[in-house]
Image: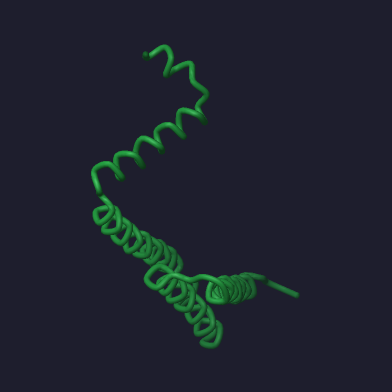
Length: 125
């Protein structure tokens, strides 16, 4: 059996594993446990994003502190909007026009944060 398993295409092997897990969930009636696990993973993912942004801020807080007030306000406003947008998507979800709005707000906020950061790091014209 080990020789058969090792000789299988890795893609087919992966699909067989996914099918086996799905079959176990259906047979053992683990839908509620899966829903609970999904909620926990969503919250953990959101906290990981927030922690990553905190680490980026902590690493560069002296540089950001030297920026003019307007640039700091725009940069932090964009970052807070990104975190709020991702948090809303994780907690509420989105489909249709709400998903389009999520992507638009995320893209515009990321562009604003990048633009402020780039403008503050560019020396010259």
